[in-house]
Amino acid sequence: MPSLGRLHLITDTRPGRDPLAVLRAALAVARAELVVQVRVTDDTTDRAAYDLARRVVAACAPYGATCLVNDRLHVALAVGAAGGHVGADDLPVAAARRLLGPAATLGATARSPGTAADAVAAGASYLGVGPCHATDTKTGLPDPIGPAGVRAVATAVAVPVIAIGGVTAATVPALRAAGAYGVAVVGALSAAADPGRATAELLGALTC
Image: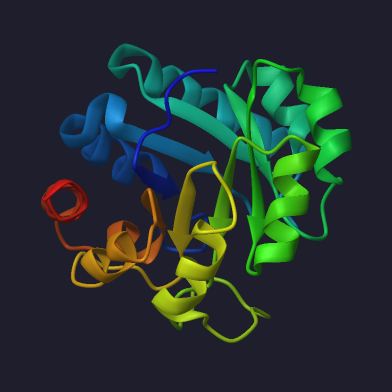
């Protein structure tokens, strides 16, 4: 399994967003340190998800960046992505691991030490933990767990913990201090006036 980058960009496919433009700006700065998680809205067709994921894989390749597909693992397989990420309402982690195979990168969502340990035992390569802070990029989320919640999960597992939910460059140091290996962002890049500069600021906070 390839090493995991510390900065995860989750595609923002809401109306008015240009996920590929944001991706290109982030790749130019982060290069192989970037992990791109292709996430689409529930009403997106498989064909549209496939087309976006295929373009993301192609954009990542020259930089050695990693492309994962959230939720729709058949799309991940179809486009030759490095793996996928499953949430609580998606395929169980063990089933996802069987589908993707032993060499794929497989992320799983967790917010408590118990569910985190279960996900790792079932085959998760890393954990997306949160929401850490309030966010409006996804509806129906539970209350934020803050750095303390990240710490509780990070101390319970031996795989990388990726903090997600309302993450900004300013909040990264506290999350890293709590044990997060890296962070996943949506709005911090997709809503930035200069996504390239925002990428550099996030990377700086992750590596200082």
